[in-house]
Length: 256
Ligand code: PGA
Image (cartoon, rainbow, N blue to C red; front, side, top):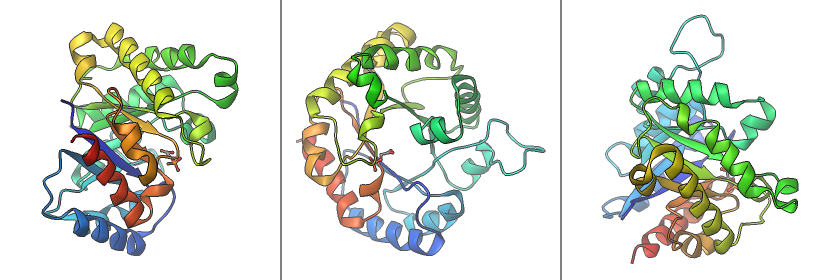
């Protein structure tokens, strides 16, 4: 059985002081528990060292929300994957819909970033998902297939242990409107089928596919109990300890 992954995407929230106290509270509530999955928080870059210190020795993994597409040099304002690795990061979110929209990130850039972070020994959480208009037009499967086809076959080192998919329907992100567990399962099964054609059946069967978009403690168990939903990428509900730990509890219960 695939291990679940519950990943908190803090977005542009929580500086070092607030991040440290949230991470310490989350780490404190996970301490000593034998989890059947992985729990990750992805703070803003400047908050990473504070979270690393707070999480030290606890089952709380550290992620980043983005990385540069070069591994160093004259690229003002960018952060190299190897620097993230040195800071204790193990996962990097790539291709979040907010970056696709506001930073105009395209497939070529995403492929460069993922290949580079894989080469640095980091794991990628690759986000994709359809817009509301695309779903209304019944095009969600076609859109998702194109997003996966545009990136997965071009990854040099991709394997199920260093690549995680995150299906995030854009209409569900930060809107309070969650995909139903049936909708999520349908799209996850479809993603796995497409990934199977691109990467092979065996790797696709081992690939973890997260759901993202208004996931909360009250719907986590139902979502994560579906056969192809291997956890969640959590925005708003990752900012409060009881909400986030409630989602981890849902993930644990989904494995009972
Ligand atoms: P949300 O965000 O949980 O606030 O909808 C999810 C995400 O953007 O990853």
